[in-house]
Length: 498
Ligand code: PLP
Image (cartoon, rainbow, N blue to C red; front, side, top):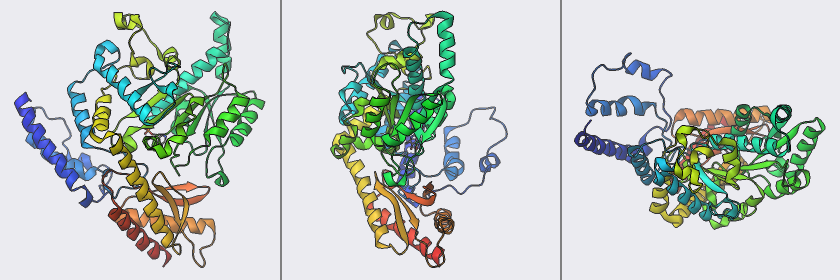
């Protein structure tokens, strides 16, 4: 493909993408293909000769689109959104055009410098404490990772190495190796029962034990200092050493926010700042971007008592997948755990210590130019536009919960609305009395709704209760859609109860 053909192909592709977006609401939200559908449609072998773009493009609509679930549809209410915007798509286009493996500053200074700048912009827009700014008093800073899972695994490695380093002072050589090997086998990473599985997976990758701290309905499924204290004391009594905790702003099931102040207070007592402290990472994968609105910023006020924080711009902030932003209070914690300086990587800029080499802030070596799409999104919407985006969805969540309450004969809210998410169940009637029977009833309605295909919801189990999750946070969802979602749910509930 030469540049003239590229221009024609790109125009044709953009036309098709615009048409896809303009008609997204009319498409059944979940793909209905059967497993293995694509193998039947594509040849067994790769083509020997190159094909014309027009032939390739035809296959996108006829063969690929049927196998897509339309995450940008206003009727997509499942899990959390993975939001998209045209400015972010343009960012992806430029990023891929300028492609390179920008592991060091000198690989493309703009890649590194723009990332540092937009992460400082965001830290300020989210009102994060100044310790997370690249020029803050503790030498912190931000970095873009692909996903929250990568961010969590990365900080867990840094936390493990920091803990091992700080709790084996004065040793060297074989003595140090032995002490570290013994200690490593005792390390425990903590999450709560509501923490996303990314933390357990990070513990598996990091080679440490994992324990989850119980959460309770009476606390709104938040992790509290009290529960944390009980778990830490229990583990220590067994000779184990908790060194890391994921606290969550917006848990996956119910969007609860852990009780940060009581967690920090308990840790200040049990593991005071200094050698042996427990690294606290705040995973705000979905709800963290709500901090762009001043009414949520009190949540971030004490994050300087913790060590790191991440949120996924690709979930709720109009930035196409993938883009998880991570801040640490001291960048050296990452660099000391992850730095590799092979001879081939040496250069005057790195040696001068005046530049950031983001390869040392992440697990992969090479990296994409992700900050371009962030820059385009922030500049295109402005902070006010981003606030309006979040507030619209929070308002739609409130609208949905109000509608649910108007049919208290059919539904019961389990939690929420929180950050647009309402978790609800069907109300048992007459002979539907046990928890199992009620759960079966809600599941019947849930499955019927998803099979019908007008809207797509996900479910969860909270405190033994099977519940549906309604999260209207995709870019094009409006109040009229929420009213329609509710009508679909009422019809399914009435049928299930009939
Ligand atoms: N943390 C929370 C609270 C989540 O809700 C999710 C996914 O929904 C994740 C982490 C994992 O996100 P990622 O796919 O970016 O690893």
